[in-house]
Length: 74
Image (cartoon, rainbow, N blue to C red; front, side, top):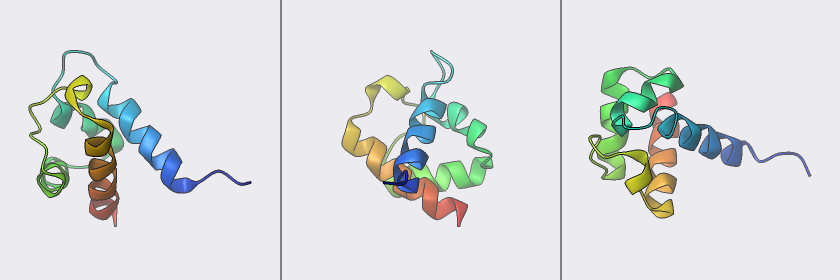
């Protein structure tokens, strides 16, 4: 089977979230190439405080954030 593009996007997001330890999520997501406004909008849409750190998110929160980031990139 070919790779699932949604799965690849999800794991790229998670890698970005964990890219620099001790940084807030909103700062780590900049490595995805999104601007601050798009990041803030995606976090708000997902219902996640951007000041949180990646390790505090549950899998369901990562999934919501992945959908919100995909929307922001469209």
